Length: 121
Length: 112
Image (cartoon, rainbow over all chains, first blue to last red; front, side, top):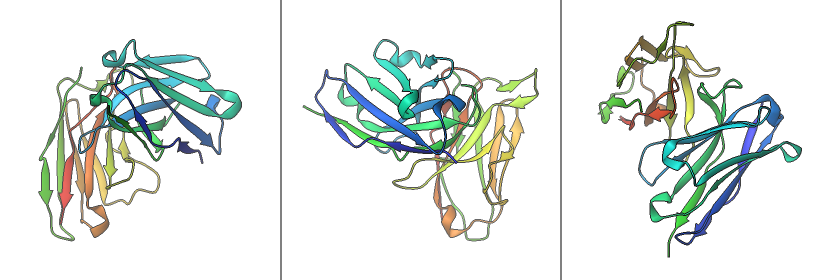
């Protein structure tokens, strides 16, 4: 059973970038597809995009086009989400999650514990 | 983008009673080629990530109690908790994965 372990909380200045990692244990990246979903304080869930490491493909929500990059490192079984040009509106808990199947058209069955990113001057 | 409109925003249900949550998609999420509805339901408790309960609108995830069930097709979907237990107090979200961007309902808070 795959488990996802995310990196720790971050505090960033407006205009800077943040990179959050998500390490998969109990399985390999190449067997799965991954997504990033964020949740602002007291708010709902927002899909940011998805990546299929074995195909090297990623799809980003248009809202984040140009400032979001998802990557994967097979050697460490880790996926990364980097978001640039941060504003206070990017303050949220960021979750990585695994798609049920190796496709970006599916539900998310395994979730990381979440990483709080706070953007403040 | 497909808008997922959930109702109600919150509901209070007595222990052992039925809870019903609705979700309406702004367009059909039924894929005709495989006759599957691209809808999932999640449960989220405070300080925890969401937990998958139902996918393909009505398929229960492994390990999820059978008091949770999903139904519906096309644009209208329902999550039912047949006999509410204390541990079911949470926020529930619907999710469409028919098209990009994936979108979620705003959530329904279930209380006792």
